[in-house]
Image 1 (cartoon, helix red, strand yellow):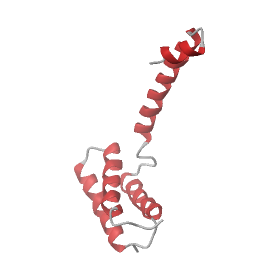
Image 2 (cartoon, rainbow, N blue to C red):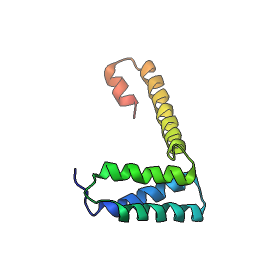
Image 3 (cartoon, rainbow, N blue to C red):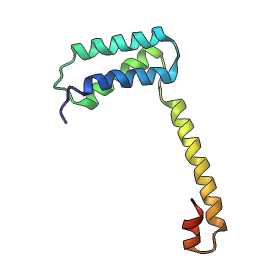
Image 4 (spheres, one colour):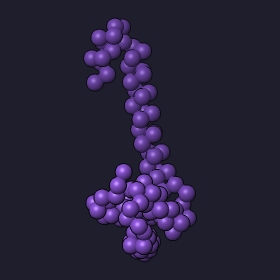
Length: 106
């Protein structure tokens, strides 16, 4: 997989999104973006996108002292899926036939 020039602004967007999940502090956002931009300028662009993305997220974690910037959003997503699952499971238990199961889940 080769780096495409469109990857560069995407890395900056990813970094900003990740730091915004952690903090509302604009100064922290700027610091992350500046460090990511510096890293991208210093990097060899013959690296793969996953290699550079790893470096980007290392910077986010380092600047914010947060191991998992996506922890809160992952928890919210998992909670939502669990709620949908439990609702669907309840409806399936009440269904009499497989056809009724499919019609009743909607």
